Structure formats: C-alpha cells, structure tokens
Picture (tube, rainbow, N blue to C red):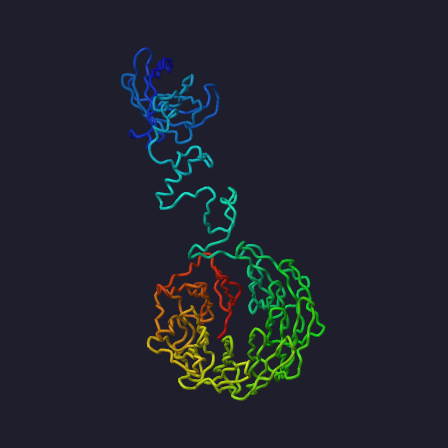
Length: 640
C-alpha cells in the first residue's frame, strides 16, 4: 500500500510509500521468524534523494508522544538510497506484534552526520495480506502439529470429538471401549479420574511387576524382632526392638486402601520382644516376653482393631513371667505353656486364657511334662502335643505329653519307642501322626526319628533304611503324603535328602543328579507338586543357585542362574501360587533391596523392580496375602 504523507528533513522530504511484512525467509507460514522488510522513498526537496543515509526505527504503542516504547530503537547505518528508494530489514524480536495497534517512529540523518532528526507523525503499522489471513485462519488452513503446551487445559471437550473417535482410537491400539456399566482396571487404588466420574471400587487385581509404596499414613518406627499377624484384611505390626529401645507401639496396614493406621498405645503392654502373639479372629493377644536383663513379662493385653483399643489381659491366674514359651490358639482359648526366664528357671506350667471372659484357667500340673524350653508343640484339633527340648545345659529330653483343654488333663506320651533326647529337631503333623526327625543334643547330631500316634499313644520308629545322614538346620516339608528332608549341617554342608512315606515306613532317596550344592539356611517352598530350594550358605560361601525337586518323578531341575538375584542369605521367599518371590537379604558385606520372581512353569526369572521398593535390609518380615507380598521392618547391621 502507499503512504501519502511527506516529511521534510533539512531540505529533504521523505515519503513512505510501502510497508510490507515478510515474516521469515521461506514461503511456509509455519517457518516464519520475526524479521520483516520495510520499503520507502526519500526526497531531497522536490527531487528524489541519492546517496547514503543513517535510518533509526522504534515501535510505540501510540501515535502521541511520548507514548510507551515497546521495541528498539534499531539503526540501519549507511543505508543506500537510489533515486529516492531504499529497502531495510527490521527485526524487533518476538512479543512485539500481539494484535494491538502499533506505530513506527523513524529518525534520519546523513551518513555519519551526527544527531538524528525524528520525523513526525509516527506511522501506523497496518496488516499485510498474510497477517490478515493469519488472523482469520480456519482449521482447514492449519498445517503441522500443534504442540501440547499450546493447547489450553480443558479446552478440548467431549462435544469437540467426532462421534466414535475415542472408541476408534482404542480399537486401533488393540483396546476396547468401556460400555455403560462396564468395569475398568487401574493400578491406582484411589484413581480420582475414575472415582470422580462415578466408578465404584470393587477390589484389586495385580497388574505386573510393580512395587507400591506402603507409606501412606504413619507406619511404625523402624524395628526388628517384632510380631506380625494377618487378620484377613490387615497386617498388624507390634512390639520389638528399635535399636535403642523396646517399643510398645505398632500399626495396622490395609493393603486394599494402601494405608497405615496407628495402633493406640493407651492401655498397650510395655515394650518387649520374644513375646507370643495369637490372632483370635477378632483380636490380637500379646503375652509374655523380655525387655533386657532380668525383665521378663507375665502380662499382656488384647488389641481390637475395629475399636482401636486395648483390653488388659487379667493377671489373676496368669502364668509366671517368661519367654521362649509356646502359645497356641484352640479356636476359643490361648494356651501358654513352658518357657524360660533366665539361668536355670525353666517352666513346666501354664494356663489357658479365654478372651471372652477375660479369665485364666490353670493348666493342671498333674501329668504335665518336665520343665523345658525350645520344645515343639503342635495342635491336633483337640489336643496340644508337647515333646522334646531341653531344660539345662546339656540336658536334653525325649519325653512329652498331650494336653486336652476340654478335660484340663495331661496324658503322658509313652517313651517306649520314642526317639532319643534332642532339640532343634523338626516335627510335622500329618493329620493323624506327629513325625519327629533329626536334630541335635550338643554336638550329637541325629539321623533318626519317630512317628507318634496320639490315638494309640504309640511311637513307631521311623525306618533308618535309606534315611538321610544325621543333621540339623535341615528343611522338612509335608507334601500331603510324604515328608521331604533336604540339606542341613553337621560340620558338613549337605546336598542330599530323602522322602519319608509314613504309610509304608519307607525312605526314598532324593535324586542327586542335578542337585544343588550343599547348604544350610537355604529357603525351601512347596508348590503343590515340587519343592524349590534356593540360596543359603555352603562350602563356597553365599549362594544364588537352587533347584526344583519333583518327588513324583524323583528328579531335580536346575533353577537357572540367568536373571536370578545375587547370592545371599537372610532373604525372604514367598510362594504366590505360581511364582516364588525372593527379595532382600545379606551376603556378608551388603544388604539388598532387590530380588526376582521365579516361575517354575517357564523356568525363568523376572527381575523385581526396585522402583518404589523398600530400602535394603535383612531379617525383615514378608507375608503373602493371596495377591501381594508385604515387606516391613528389618535390620541393616548384621554381624556374622
């Protein structure tokens, strides 16, 4: 366009006849910059100017002076003017031309001639044809991708999407639209995007290899040698040692809501460890224990998580203070028996506690076994069977008795045919018999055992033919029809074992072909068809290998080392129903916060992610809820 106003400058006049905005160097609007070309004509009096001039340009917000200087001034020195015509390129940078009115102020002087003379009035900058197009461009004229940061939050609403567009995008990704009333899965228990549009939580399905941080709410302070019980919906942590004190606090963890709820300390027992804890179905009962020196406890309390309240366990009729006692839950009562309170103070008494009446009933001493600790106690469904243990230095026992709480009577277990005295033995309940095997009496390692049938009050020697060599710290698992003994220690690290069939009273050697190296402190899980052994300590130090033993085929299958966790002990191992999860532990120098999942069907390891995982530790607790492994607590200053 032509500008028709004339300016005088020392006998010169300047007519500005054309202003063209050429933002950029290419025809593409998407690649335009901030520079533009300005063309004008300068007259010297009535004739066109020729020569070299200095020109100065600035942008203002108003035609009136002074106005607000928005950009510049910028100077084009030694600008050639020929026959009155000149062309300059101006670049005021970004953010100047925002759509509001703008005016160009021009100053001129002869080249190197000194001060500039400002020409008036300022010239309005009007749109060029491309600027007019840009201001009214529609969607059909836009090319390229709009950056996500240039799309305002909430500006694209459902009415802006074509019908079926969302479903088509889902189908293209191999997903499907959610029909009205349908269900969706989320790894976030409290997904506000779903809750805010009316979805209702129905539960949780694990979605792969993920850790979920269990820190919502107020978890208990760090500790170890605490107790942990599972209520059916929550894990309750209580007591233990924090590294500086015995604690009497704890918390309940709800994995569905992913929250901790602090347990009140009002009415709680004093801080302790080595206490016993039983879950009644509605309450957790704490009793006995130790807190250093000669501080043994003979008290306790019941914690009700629904009310978040403690009820003191009456001291009337309670057993004397002790630890290393046994406590079993019968379905209506907690039975405490035996134990130790330091020195030569071993106990042969106990009592039954009924939480409904808050009353103790003394266990009759008539016919009770001799005082002891580190004995075994199993509950048959109607009786508690106590056997073995020791009650003084080098004094080991091979007797016991059955206690019937309904009749409050002891029935002595015959010693005829009973195994020789021992402790640290294994004992499994088959449903009809208690099988005792192995163990130690000082340096006397045992390789024998016996089956006790309470209905007949008789012992049947476990056959020695084909039995494993004498040992302790072995593993014993019950498959449903056989007891499998494997590994262990007696000054030698074992990598053998045998299966004992009580119906036939026969041992079948566990295959040695493909068997893992000898070890103890290993883990062993029963899958329902195989025993999986992994890790531990042996002749070659800490181990990260293992094997699967199939008793039906009597074969070992090597657990691959590829992808397996590094060598360790003091780790935890849980069986999920399809996988064995190994996590944490210690290898003599380092603590771990990693692990892996072993799938025996695929015979491979899958690394457990460390994202969000707890800090490295050993001697922690790990429980399997049916859908999750919950890790809590532990220790980081182990001495071997």
